Image 1 (cartoon, rainbow, N blue to C red):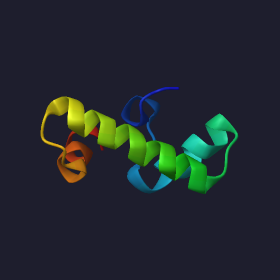
Image 2 (cartoon, helix red, strand yellow; image 1 turned 90 degrees about the horizontal axis):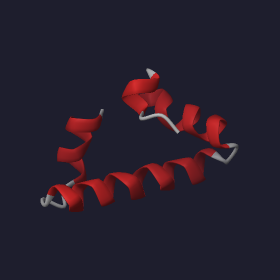
Image 3 (tube, rainbow, N blue to C red; image 1 turned 180 degrees about the vertical axis):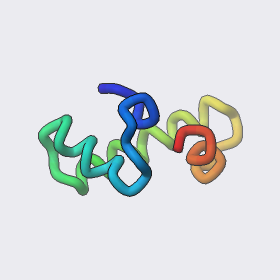
Length: 57
């Protein structure tokens, strides 16, 4: 799956586009998105999803 920024998915469209791309519900896509952002925040060493959101869009 492409990164949201690379795919051109705007913030509000991101979850809907990801759900359609994966063939899952919007709720499932939102949960996957949140989990991925949390993992990235931990790997960056600050554990703050809002900071990660600034980096990733």
